[in-house]
Length: 195
Image (cartoon, rainbow, N blue to C red; front, side, top):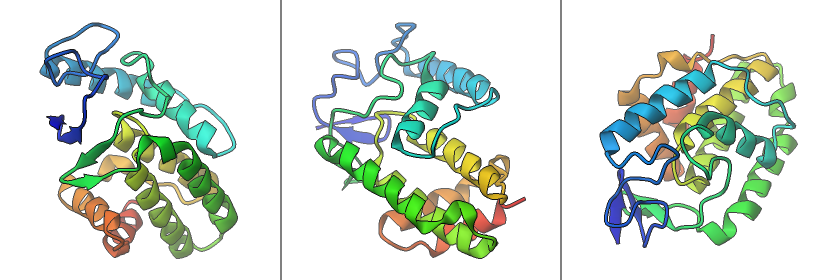
C-alpha cells in the first residue's frame, strides 16, 4: 500500500511509475506544479456555466469532467482503484456505479429540490453530501465536484450556498464526522453557508 496525496491506494495505475504524482495531460511530474495547474484550471472551469442535467449520477460525472477536463484524461470517469483516507475505505470501485445510482435516486425521492423549508433542504443535502463523500467516485477532485454540484442544487431549490465562505477548520471536520454517520456538524456548516 502506498499513500497518494493523503489517500491510501493500492497499485495505483493513475500515478507515474515510481511516483505519487497523478498522470496528467501536461505530463507534469512535480506534484507541486501539478497541484497549481489543477487549481488554476478547475477555478477557471468553475467560473464557466456548469453542465445542465437531471441532477443524476450521469450529470454529476459531467460536472467532474467539466472541472477537470484540462488536467486528467479520466475526468468524469469513476475510479478503478480502491482508496481510503486515514484508514477509512471509500466505496470499492466495483460498487461505485450502483451506489451512485442509489444515492441520486434517494436524492430525487427526498423531494429536496422542491421543499420550501431551508432547514429540511439543508438536512437532505447534508445527508446527500455525506453519502457522496463516502463513495468518493473519482480518483481526484471529489471535494470540488461535490461543492460545485451542491451549489447547483442550492440554486435550483432556491436555497443558494456561498461556498466561498467555507471555513476549512470547521467544514473538514464536519465532513469527517459525516463519514462516521454524525450529520449534525455538516448540517450546521451548510446552514451557515446559506445566502
